[in-house]
Length: 67
Image (cartoon, rainbow, N blue to C red):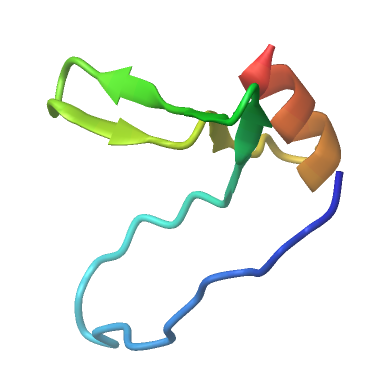
């Protein structure tokens, strides 16, 4: 497992409210298929993963979220 990139565009509204939650996502390829998760709430597909808890490493979060 390796970190491919980090995304942060730094284009925040300094006068607005923001909610920031770091997350880790996985690209899983098996038998020439890419595994995705379907969000029923928002009706879209995304890579498996989720939020990183306080004092949790990126790797630990990724393992927990993809399990």
